Length: 541
Image (tube, rainbow, N blue to C red; front, side, top):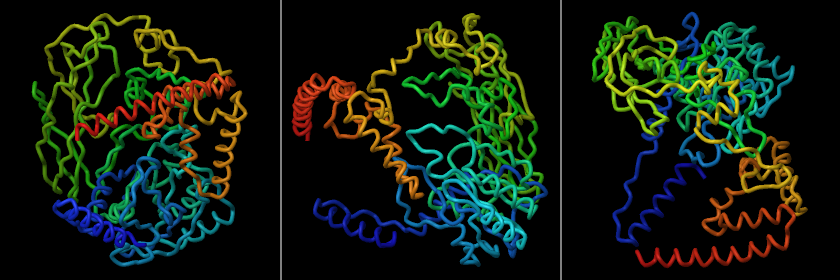
């Protein structure tokens, strides 16, 4: 059934339900208008990362070779609780094959998959992609993270693209130097080939309108204005957490403290592929005339190009000496449209969060008095304008030298003792691995003392392997394997309580009769509690 038919049927059901309840009928909405809105929103999030020699935007009539499985079957959303049913879903191949307005004037030379969906390629697939790329004016290569690479409920173990995609990119660029790489995914990746690719565009997970939005950006119908919401490191090893994440035991230690994301990379001076807040435009902007007072920062943004564009002006602050924390932090931004050849005066206001920090010794948010530095620019590493401001406030407590590596932003070397000083309390230690606890993942049932629990764990692992082998991963099984046992209480609508899970854990750990007895008793107690709650709810209606 088509999405439009589903919508029409749903509208009929809602109208009948509203009439029976003596309510006004729901107002119908225009599917085409909503799709156009989804496309516009997606286009404003798309981020241009490279555009050497102005390869983009592509002019009408440009012949393109379309390469990549993700260009035929796009990944447009996350998994689990983020999944929605789109009313319309377009694929790049579909729109380009349709030609004309759908293709935004581009002419499709042909399509080649290039790689397998969930990893892997072959000499034959690469040869097909290379031959196709050589026949076109421009090669469009769609790559990114598939459904198995990232998902809620599991940690990524590396930052690489699925196996084979890097090979395809390198081969296609060698065959056609006018190659545009389009990224799909919800998080950062390693891009060892980035400097060899003339144009690189990040589409994220664009939703149902993401495909059309990307074509709008590639052809200049939309001037890109998206900005990276995270740092794109050059490699996993550049992250301070690389040595101890993902966690393999029941406990995870978040040692970063205030040095999370860009706050670490900027403070530690680590070179990155693309910094936080980064994004290019088909226009060129210049900043000037920064003025700062107690209310905010005002500056002039000039569009020095021949194309109307939109700039995202970002404001960062650096605290006076004596405040423990990162070198600079984002405290405001504004998105401003600037016509070609014109200038706009822009103000980013300060608020109660701009100059505050957490004062551990007094357990409160406080504003540090002294000389603050205001940085304004295009991203965290490109702030051409700066000014100082005297701020009234309190004096911070002396920084504890026992923070050790934190004082030098050497997060990768932080010890458990230094983490305890930062937290102000003793940190927990790992549970013995001999017994399963409610905090353990369901994937660990395979080492349980109970043969029933081991059987259940093996069944989950077998179901995962079977689905993966078919190339159609079962994300529900993925979630189950990576879900703590205690989470079962969240998905049973009150049927299972945390006390019942604790009793079940006793069974899992080999104490069958004691656990079963407690499980029955707690089941009855939970059922009585649920009935009492339902009576209270009924009385309030």
